[in-house]
Length: 376
Image (cartoon, rainbow, N blue to C red; front, side, top):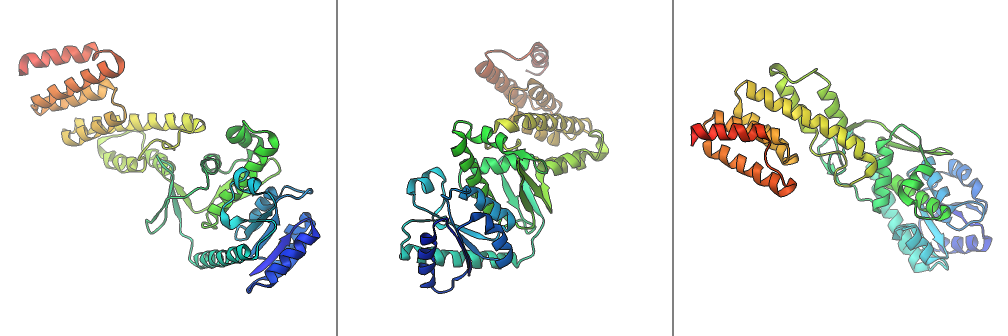
């Protein structure tokens, strides 16, 4: 395993080199006290791991780590710090990623063993052909592979998860660092906020490392750009399918029914992101309008079971939409299912009274009274 050591203190570098030479399987290809030479050394030596001091006066170690991963996402970084609280609480770095000064040989040995296992795992994975992925953003985020296996991504923190989701929401566009700070760490002073940002970006890169052919995260001076390759997104597939025809009709009803399978839940619904709210509302309006059209077409061709099925889907999402309950009541009436008409009206009446303190509108009430006169 080839390693580069970076620390602005020469004694600290020499001590770490001494410890590593006592362990098998480590080849130290460079030692640097100047962090500005790190990227050049990486390009020249192709290391598998960089031992990096967090606290260097010339540069923020966390920002440098993020730049290293942008250069080569396969590199493993082990942070070295003298500050326990600084490393663990402020930057939330997991056990594989940091060593505390003074470095203990036993702890270093365990870190090397875990690194070797992690590198072996990623090397084996990278030998496999990368398949086209489908990203699922309806409801909860997940990734579906070509073999239909679903990856439920485990994020380091909720802030890291939201950072990735926001970059994905704006993929292909420059997202300014200042905007990300305001979005996620607006309550912190600038120095701590930027440290949190660099750490979160670092963890995003680590998580995306398992999909090297599908995601590229570029660090620009002002911010970041997330690009995707060989990626489908469920909500975009849904939009493309809906765009195939101008409206729902008898001859294309099956196309629309199949298209609606892509939209399983509202956009990022499990996370309550305020920045996704406008898109979420827009998508929901499209879903509602399309679902109503599907139900009406099924009604027009006397496919009452399918129509009722779709109306029920709608009121499960929008229970207070009176027009949906009214349509179901009429369908039950067409089929002479008087008890179901009664139950549906009673359900609507109770719902509106409980939730809104009101009663069904005059059109529904008048229709129900007229219907009851002839059917009860």
